[in-house]
Image (cartoon, one colour):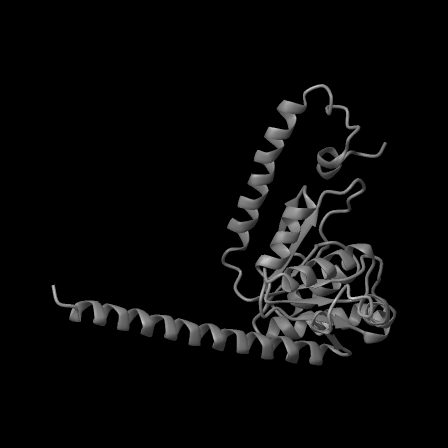
Length: 256
C-alpha cells in the first residue's frame, strides 16, 4: 500500500484528518516544519563554499552524463567546494561519488517519498526532509552556484525556482550552469521564441543561464564567479569599515 508522505498530508484537501482535527494537526505541522529548518541550518552552517548539483535520478553508471557528473563534482571538490545533492540515485549519486573520490564534503539532502530508497552510498552527510520547500531552501542557501545536468520535472523545478529568485532580487551573483546545451536547446528555443517575443521574460532574464559542455569548463566558470564574489564582498567590507571609521572620526570632531 502506498505510504502517505508529510507533503501529501500538508497539501491534500481530502486527507483523513482534514475534517476531523484540522485545528490540531496543522499547528503542530508548523512546528515540525520549523524543526526541519532548524536542523538544516544547524547541520549546514559550517559547510563553507558549496555547489549544488541537480540531475535525473534515472541515469545509470555507464552513461556519459553520469561520468561527466562524477568528474564535475570531483573537480569542484578539489577546488575546495562541498557538493550538495538530493542524495538520491542517478546523477545525484554520481555527484556525491565525485565529491568522495576527491575527499571533499559529500552532502545529501534526501526527501521523504512514497517509495523511497534512502541515500545513495556516496553520501557522507545526510539530512532528511519531509517537506520539499524546506529542502529547496537548503539547496539554495548554502550553495555558491547550481550545476544542472539533464533531468526531468524535479530538475526543472529547481532550475526555474532559482531563476525566479535571481530575477526578483532575492539572490545575487549566483551562477546557474546548464550542462549539455544540446539537451536544453529545445527549452531555450521555446523561451526565446515564445516567451521573449510575447514579453513574458526579458533578454536579461535569459542571460542568467550559462551553458557548459565539459566538467573542466563548469569548474572554471564557478571558480571564477566565486573568486569575483569574494573579492566584491571584501571590497564592500573595506568600504563599510572606512565609512564607519570616518563617521566616528567626524562625530569626535563635533563641538559639544
